[in-house]
Structures are given as structure tokens and as C-alpha cells.
Length: 187
Image (cartoon, rainbow, N blue to C red; front, side, top):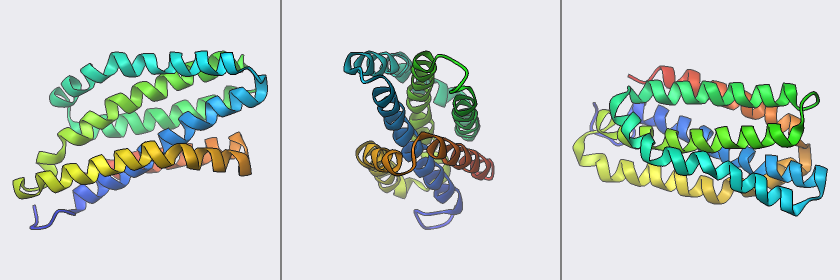
């Protein structure tokens, strides 16, 4: 470990986190927006959005336990590959499956993944930086998390309005895949 906060491995984790958190926030905003545009039903929009939070509520307490027991890099890689797979499957199934059910299931999975991903990133800090940098590393991770929660939906709305849903889905799939591949190289 070097005498700096931004070691090679910490930089890979941070870059992967930026891609994952922003990508997840963008997609989680664009999918309900697509649902609202297609159905015009604010009641359906609200119901699906509320249902999407259920896995997050259920998995948040478990995420930390899993992060303590399983290799953090493995968790991040698997969750990013799984997210890429989910979004690609959504894009391929959109025209052939009931899109309300598809959006609901996809959002539930994405919210569940987000609640499991973050504890593994936080728990990886002691393996990535020296103890003198724990506070700064936590600060960087929390700042990225906060920015993604704030800016992700804004970007999701802008990108969705300019390009539509399908390009956003395929770009997100590629980004999550890239993030997972990049995280494989964390020591």
C-alpha cells in the first residue's frame, strides 16, 4: 500500500462505484419515467416506485453482514455483471413481455443490488488504504454516494428526454460490464 489515499486499487473501486451508483440512479429514474410516459397513470407510477423500495428495505440490514463474510471485490464484480445482465435482459424483453411487470421486477432488482453494493464498498476500505486514510476514503465514498443520489435522477431525466430509453439501456449495460471487468483487477 502506498502513502497516498488514491492507490491503484482504491481508484478502481471509486471508478467502479461512480459507474455503478450513477448508472443505477439514472436507470432507476428513467424506468419509472418511461412507465409514466407509456401509461399516463400517476397511480401506477407511484405503486411501482413504492414496490421497488421493498428489496432495499429488506436487504439493507443484510448487505453489511454479507459484505463482512464474502470477498468484497467478488460482491462488487458479481453485482455489476448481474446489473448489466438485468438491464440487457430488460432491453431484450421490453417489446415481448408485459412492460409494467418487467419494470417492477427490474426496479426491485436494481434497488436490491444498490443496497447490497454499497456495504461491500465501505467494508473494502481497510483493505484498500492505510489506517491514516480511512476517514478520507469514507468521505470520498459517501460523497460519491450522495452525488449519485442527487445528480443521477437529473442525468436520467435529461438523457431519457434526449435519447429515449433504449440507448440509455444499452449504454448502461456496457458501463456496468466495464465496471465489473475493471473491478476484477482490484487486489
